[in-house]
Amino acid sequence: MSKVYVSSVVNGDPVEFLCDADTSLLDALRDELGLTGAKEGCGTGDCGACSIMLDGRLVCSCLVLGPEAEGRQIDTIEGMAEGSELHPLQRQFLEHAALQCGFCTPGLLVASKALLERNPDPSETEIRFWLAGNLCRCTGYDKIIRAVQDAAAELRQERSVA
Image (tube, rainbow, N blue to C red; front, side, top):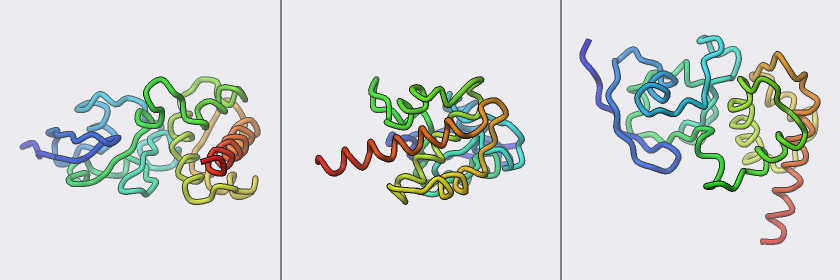
């Protein structure tokens, strides 16, 4: 099978890669670009472990073909921190011990960030609804919900000071 040339922007940086026409975006990110934060949990879009942002929309990267990334803006977990400065969600996940094995954590963080960009003050019900597509087998969800709530409060505080 011939390779497809893809040019897009990943985490703010222009990238180019080659992939087979039937390669998932998840596999292209991991294998061609070395971005291994998104994980393949199910390969069917049911677990959310491979969550990324594609043109500002939360998607399961296992359900998108690599060539579909042509000309698109992609944001992954690797772009969440700014240098060594963790995003408030990342800090709160650590402070609340909202992770155990860590397999689902990148997808949960990307999904949580997408929520807070749309709704800076979500209720617990809204957080649970938004994260329903992200499965975690280790933690339960209470610590995750508290981490998102505290990160939302921190981000609101930062915005009010700025």
